Image (cartoon, rainbow, N blue to C red; front, side):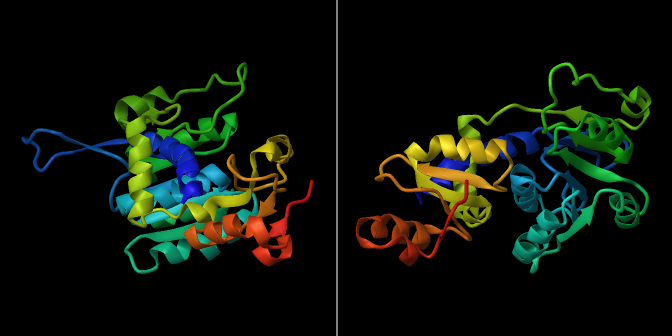
Length: 269
């Protein structure tokens, strides 16, 4: 599926970011420490921000089998998407997904972690306040990922050095994905560990780029947009659960179907 290839780039950024998480373990006090990359299996992972990238982070987190994935946002609509789309993805596993508004997320975190805090926190929002405050939400030896970018001039944070020293918490970040991360993204799609169609909001032809950029800038779309460079001029259409069959029907129907026959809705704007 062409759209899966396109979405492997943002997914590679998620994979790169999550691989920066390092958790140390010892089988015995005299045993050497062992380092494990990725989110803590059986732990508590918190995703701050349920926007397009936050939702990708949440689904990609399932491969590490945390006991709890807590997705936090200020938007009930985005949290409803998590409940309706992501929760069924792990219904048959040991991972539990929780969608919660900012504020009530702290009592929920205390309850689910028995007061320890989160083993992994991924900040998928560009909020200086959240980056400062979330340091206190970490469990001992927890990892805080500053995935969401701050504006230059607002990017200096207050570091709790006592937590870094005594609780051995880590603060990490990354920028972009390497070719190896793209390969891992494609493997995850091929083996049904990640469904890129769930994160796709619109499709269209390449000449719709100005309109697509305007929609993103004005926050009038809450998902990824894929533009096909090899098709005739085609306005942006809203998609849902885009898969290989839907893409093939769309590309085939461009030749001889009316827009209403494609089963997708023209985008506004």
